[in-house]
Length: 115
Image 1: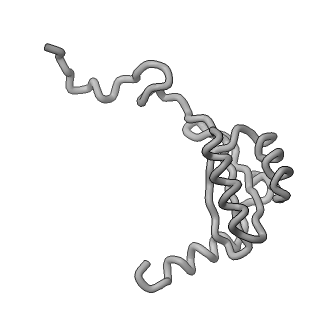
Image 2 (image 1 turned 180 degrees about the vertical axis):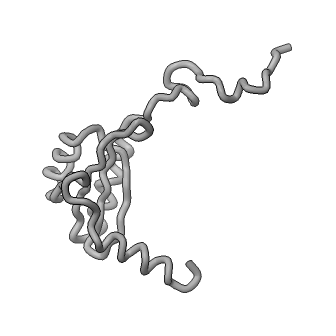
């Protein structure tokens, strides 16, 4: 019989497993999603968010109408390569901030009936 302590669920587990404390890295699925999302919209710009203690570097894609999506990206350089390959301008959020159209879009979505 295996004993289970009351705090066992909070203990860190081995490398790569749940609870390891490791930040999940960007993968091909993240990049594929970003490419498909950008291809389905017009006027897309990329805003790179720096790595934090809890998240990997992320890229926020914002379409012409303010619709947006966010996924992990390996680094600022990876985001710049992504932008170059997909002809999307890339900005650093820490330098330019978030676009107003994104905030406006979210506000419009909140006011929609049934939202």
